[in-house]
Image 1 (cartoon, rainbow, N blue to C red):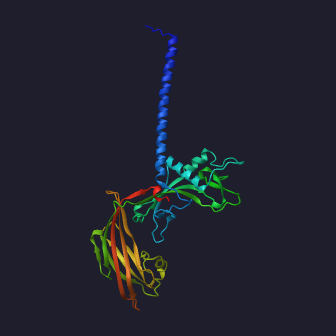
Image 2 (image 1 turned 120 degrees about the horizontal axis):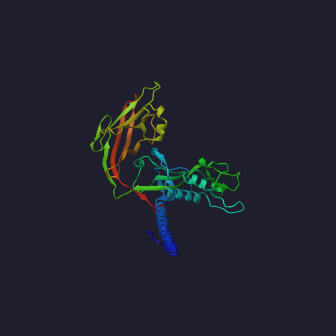
Image 3 (image 1 turned 90 degrees about the horizontal axis):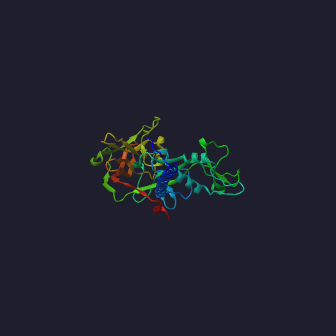
Length: 370
């Protein structure tokens, strides 16, 4: 049996179906677009609230350095080097944030007879955005956190990015002539092509800061204990045994003291090859997972102002509590002297051991802004 359909009604039916499909599709697209835009805006807000922008661009990460409201990164020359890792950012929001900050720090876009200066083409912009790097500590437990001080834990860096000398900056960010996109370098144009100022590869545009959460901070001090020569001191709760002794070499043998000694001051370290005798404090751990440590004080030749050692000897992140756990030691040599035969004549020293545990929290930009 054949069903006859009026052609006129069939056309209207097809038209109405098409209209319904159009509105449904448009609604889905608009809803999706609105959702994505809201997500992007929300992510931008999160990024803005995480990173501190330096007052002037630099090319160093300063991971582990304290942060000053007035001076920015503050380095401590006595702090050990912190192992860092570099990762490529795959976050588009983070990439846009880094690039926009780079433009803001490097100069403004200009318009004139030469036209607007900026990134030339989508390919250049894509190459620039894909060159955003995240630099952080291999272990955040290595950062020497102290109460109430912000520390740099992460740096957002634009790789292949050159910034000219401030005095020569004229324009915004552009791509050098003849530069390939694979290794493309953005530059700030100068007043004169001959006057380019100083250049530095890479540009750190933002830092992430953390500090100790004082609500979680716990400290256990073992007190100031006399440190006698050849006498073992046991710290059972810290799984540590300490002993002090004199170590020397025979003059004229051409030998030197062991190279694995941790000298109490930089000057002693610099003169270590000429050192004939040293007071050493051995810290031996009863935990097989931890390494022993030997701290040295110059005995002969004697060096003034090299009688104190203070630092972190062990740190880790406890995966059960998410807390940083560490041990800090302080050794003070009050008086020490040798006989002409390089034998101990005087030795008065004290040692203290402190156990700490704490969580860290993110420092918001508003907390460090003046």
